Image (cartoon, rainbow, N blue to C red):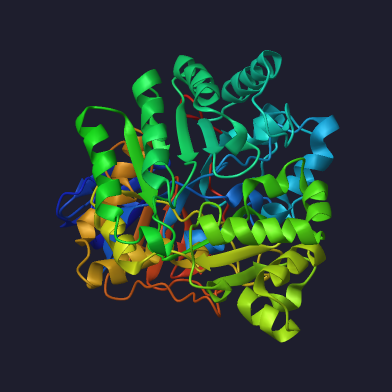
Length: 531
């Protein structure tokens, strides 16, 4: 007797192939049969007539390590059909955290993980004590975190001894189950690393068969150069490279998506192990301090706050931004395209633009930005509309570009419901399978493939991301005419609609559109072990 039978649905298996009407039988957490009309008995049958039956979706780039311990049900993701999240991205990871650096670590992660209780921990202890969740989780260790634990926020090359310590910490993390290393070369302290430092760490990854993902050094004026740097890591070491949330920021760079995609496509044609992901929005999110020139945060957050109160520092900031635009985001029309998402110490300002706040206070916009950072102790997180819609659609429409929300798993109530975060937390995958398909950007099999089979292949997962006999039963059932994102910038805490059933490792987590409370996810560790 099988555990479940999903009957009468249109099966799109995640390989990119056209769908077919079939029944899916599940037992002991795995798919045991896919048949046109099954006669296999099962304890429960789920009626999927009129709906698509697809593999559980893979969110290949997320920051849910900051929220899953607070919200293990992962509502905003699982209700879109997401069954696997890859965490520890952009160089930021909770572990390892040495006792002597824990205060600096807390300060550094405050804009991203202000509600999370951070304690000294090894990577092994961190993974072993990570709570049970509704989604499967893959962990990465962050390069910024490794550098913070050795050279702090200092703007300099690491010493030979510090590099050896970083290599040792990376080895320990990989042995404890880290899937690979992520970097955030756009901001301190990662931006202080040269290419040789990254290649040295990538050689450690190569020895372990692990992977490298990168928020590249620049996504604006020097975006192509930054992408080439990431590709060079693959070419030099043979390590698989995932370029994170591909984009072109800043009005001076709009219209260049085709050229940027061409750089990556050429590397792939040469046989280099390079992938990239993107989210279908023209707006990004980041700590507000990361928009300022990198010298502002040299020496850490207290040093930054001390600088921002000085008139000569603000004059230098104004000149730098007038000349170069914002760090990593380029030139923007005005501070009206920068909106407060979360301000732990000024919660009443969430949803307002920095231009609006400056006008209300009758101050120069840059002075308003500096004053806001001071009042919020450097912890502000913002939304910034810095991309062109055409570039976003060109990137999203490329069939080989994968899908990562770059967002946390949230909920409409509880600890993760505060502020006005990016709606991509609630809508990335529903938008992909909904409006992106219905508007003709992608076919439904192609859209599903991007976020299932193709993502699984990029991660080296052989038994997830596809519906076939023997694969793990991560399954999403949805109405293709109804699936949609509902979250907006003004009202982001709204669940997607159209997903009726989600299975994780064969257990029903979403049933009739409602969360069952089941925490069926597994921690997938390097070497594809799971526990």
